[in-house]
Length: 226
Image 1 (cartoon, rainbow, N blue to C red):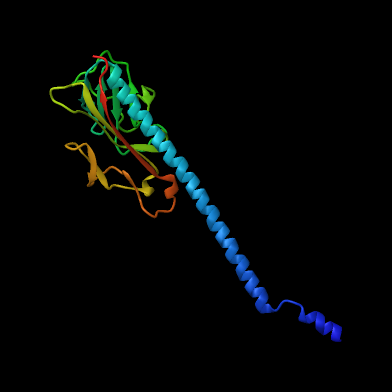
Image 2: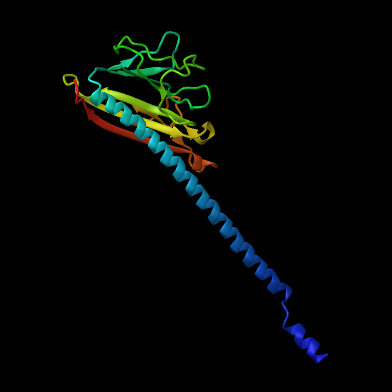
């Protein structure tokens, strides 16, 4: 009997088991939260990298066209019956775009086409309204599930047509992850507080924010070919 009692005295009490279970559960929760955070950071990095790459690609394409096309640069009007499409002509290249539209199937956002002899102020943009019939015309410069929040090409001097400022802002994410917080001030060529109906900013503390990113680049470019 003495040996049995001595053996029982060396066992775990209910309180000790409860403490051990609580410690194990806490460690498990911390590990789970850590893994979730690592996953969030990973997907946030991927989303930000893709958005920045798309922005660089767009601004490099436009600046190279200005530098080497040898033609004039014009802001062009929407085509007839289309109130959403805007555009720029650079030499024989035409950039047609819609602000705030996410690129999905059967939609276009920023299209470069060269099937025109020359650009002029009266050249209309390529219609991208609704589900455009010219869905296969030109080359799309925005990646899937991204949208343009701003694109602006401005001659810096009235007397000097060789210097231009180019600004591009690309947003990645679904509508529920974004909000309209900024607008492009044409006078300063800067994004300033205000609303224009274009979703341009990631919502703070939003579930799924790892799949939302914003990238804005601006540069000054000089024509090298005239």
